[in-house]
Image (cartoon, rainbow over all chains, first blue to last red; front, side):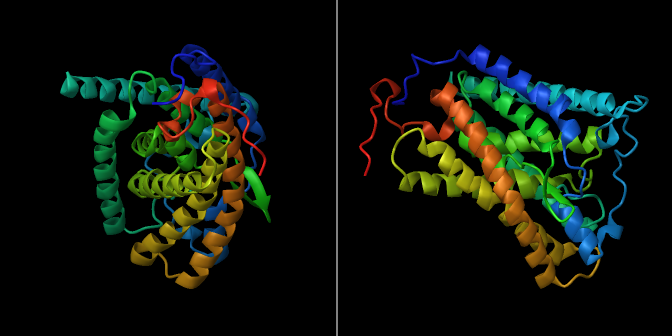
Length: 110
Length: 229
């Protein structure tokens, strides 16, 4: 490892805190301004006429389906809240998984 | 590029599910042995959250069509390909189960397209480009965005391949391949731009945590301006 591990410019804690804050702003606020046009695959499916074979997901009844919170009327609030919840859940699952995998790695080496 | 339920038939979906489960399992092992350590683990969590957040922000690519970041190359460059597969798998599972974005039976397909093909193609291209560029930190975001750009149309082409095997409705495959690649080259440009910005930020803040920088870049405190050729 030739990179300077002993002179980090930003502490890991600060990197994670600032990074997560940026992510929450993107998921909670910026996402409201996302393009609502169909994405590349949906567009191609519509153009070529096979979009009709899509079925509703088994999760279509989820209270967060399609990035909104069921029961919250205001679109900005509903989408923003859904984004924040998704970001938090993703973070919890990934940080938990990483912790688990890292521990397992230590056990084999120790 | 989230494939909904129904686009691919059951046998194809089962097959991609098995492949996805196998690669995720292998990635757990590889990530634990070769990629994740106590210093880099927090970045893996951050990358997954960023990919989730950024995937919410569709950007227009013209003619009433949009695209969003896949984040596969971005993640592979920053935290390593096996950890990147885990990040994408977590994001795709959260999207499928909580948000009904991407089908539940299509989850394996989506993990294969974005979390395996996108990750490894993006990583391989980024590594290849990095080998051609000067050995300095500023090369990393350039290599990452090249990987990002290529990963999107290749994932789109892979979808076409799966559709050829198990597509639910008959579609001329040449047309499908051409339109999928055409649109996803445009989306790849957005992918490259976002990847460049995100990787630049992390390289500026903590180059020592960046996976592809391991053992390849000169020591930071000794970095001197390179002579202009």
